[in-house]
Structures are given as C-alpha cells and as structure tokens.
Image (cartoon, rainbow, N blue to C red; front, side, top):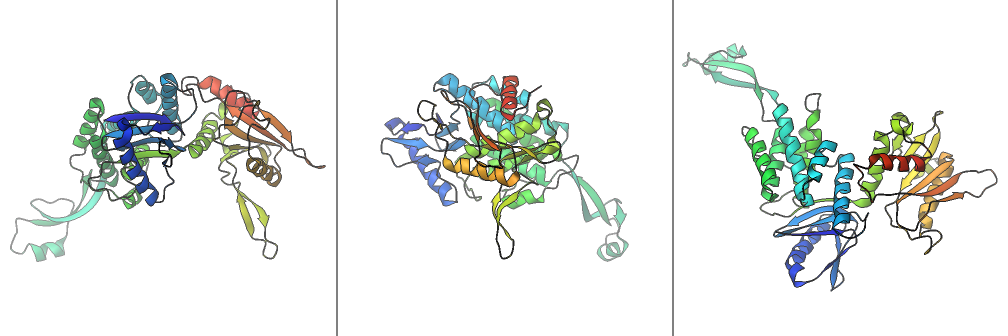
Length: 430
C-alpha cells in the first residue's frame, strides 16, 4: 500500500510512480464533489496535483494520502510535529477519541495518520467495552416452558389449550443488541477491513468478539438518531461520534457496497476556529476567566447588523467566533480566527490582511460596543502584531492583528502555548 504525506497546498508530482494512486484519488474527489463537497485537490495542472484546504486522510484501493496542516517547516521532523498537532486538535475538538495519555502512547509509534486514528478508536472502544457493554431491557411475549415475568391468562388460554406444558408470558429481557453496540460493531468491521497494523487489527477483532450477540447492521445515518444517552451510556458518545465519521467517510454516499475508499477530512479553517475556542474554554481557569462568560460562535449573544425599516426584522446576522464577557456581562473581547498564512512585514506592512476581515471586525466592534477586537492568525516568520484604533469622534474601539505559534508540540509544550494565548487575550495564564 502506497502512502503519501503532504501539507495543505503542497504539490504532488504526476510521476509514473504516483499515477495509479492519483487516478483513484481523482475518482474519489469527483464522487466527493458529486455529493456536495468542495474539491479536495486542484487537478488543473498537468505537472502536479495540489492539495487544497482540507486536512485528514483519504484511503483508496492500493494507497492513502494524509494531508497535514501547514504549520511547520518542510521535512520529516516538521511533518511529524504537524501530524501530532493535528491529532491533538482533533482530540481537543472531540472529532476523534483520545485523551492526553492516549496521544502520548500513539505519538511514540511511527505510523501513518490513518493507522493512528484507528488505533485510538480501537484502544478506547475495547477499554469501554471491558468496563461494561451497553445493555437495555426489551419487553417480549412468548410461549415458555416455565413462568417468567407475568402470565398473560387470556392469551395463554387461547394459545395453549392443547399445550398445557407451555406458559404464555410477558417479560423483560436484558439484551446487548442495542443501537450503540450495533454502530460500534459496524465501525469496527469497517476499520478492520482498512487497517494494516497487526496491533489495531487484534483489538478490532476483540471488539467484534465482545459484540458477537449484536446484530450485524449496514448502518445508515438515521440509525444514529435512535441513540439516547444517559448517565450509563454517555461514555460511549465520543466513540459513536467517531463511528459516524468513519461510516460516512467510507464513501461520500451512505450506500457503500464493496467500495474500499475511505476518508476522514476536515476543513482546516473550521478546525482552527473550533480548536482555539475549545482551548480557551478548557483552560479558562488559568486565564482567569469564567466559562459562562465565554461564548463560542457567539451562542446566546448573536446580533443582527441591520434592521429593515418597515418591519424591524433583523438582517445580516453577526456571529463572531468567540465573545468573552466582562464582569458586568458586556462584551470585553471579540476574537475571530483566520486560517491564513500572511505576508511578512517586509513584504507588506499590513501583512496581507484582507479589507473584508477588517470590515467584519469593525462591524462586530460597533454592534457589540466592544473595546478590544482581535483577528487571530497562525504565526509565520517575519510578521509582528498590529494594533489599530477605529476612527471616530466618539469611538475608542481598537482592532488587533495577533498571531499564535503552532510550530511546536501543542500537547507537550502546552504551558508556553497557554502563555502565548494569555498574552493575546491580554490575560496572564496561571
């Protein structure tokens, strides 16, 4: 199986060695676009294929491509760090299963990204099943040789007039054939078909053995709607969420048949936005913040930019990536993340920040009456933070352009990263 590792917007040469893999990737990309997705690659150049803004992994018959975020220098060490950071960001945003201890274990093994994702799922699923398989009570009615539950006298008299040795009963059966177990079994079977690593295959087979009494099901999206979590089953929720990605990722369409193509893809700008919001929320105490004052996607704090004159209906919804309230409940800081690699100060004094981004933050500042407003970008060499004051006689709002360094191990170097985030927010990380 041929593996290729590239970063966002990196070129893959159309060599004879790559041609078979690229033709299968192109067929997958066309199918993906036909199902409503944005193109994963740019196919227009005859000399090479260029990755676009998705990160993750695509497996097709005979090979796989992993696309990593562009956060470090080219080379093996840079790609390894980018791979580790991608796993950390996916874990932080709950798109994959795995806590710090799981990532630490996986990080010591040199495996393709796809195999690492499978290993994380298999290890966590097996651990949870050993703690206890999901069960539920199902009411059943049947003829039995002995009394179980409640004897249904009327039905018994009709059905067993000639069979006095039988009793028609209604009883509750404690079964493991639940929607949660069906989905975990289906996902494990799919991943067993894909994985090439012996240790992961062994764990996936153990999972399937644990769930031997569970119905084999060709899972569709509506099956996930049948799950209702409670205190006993909420521990399975991250596994089910990942199973949804797995079973959808097997094909752009839900009907898979024997097709072996598979993908787990994430738009990098959305992943970066969610990662920063969840990171600040998780470490709110160290930033001296109250979690109830942090509003990701401005949930509970969304506003309209304009109102129509004749009926006062709101138009042009404003939805900042992150709003942090002050002690009085009014917005203290608005932060909008942008996954763009800007120009250096020497190339452009504005670093290539677009007018549209500035205008957007200007609208946020005025509508929310927020004094401090930040555009946050990934750091690139040669750039420096900028701070601007909005022009106006009665306005003192400012807009800042800030950066965070992602070319470090975000998991093991977390204290330095939190210190940097704290400085951006104007807060000291404890």
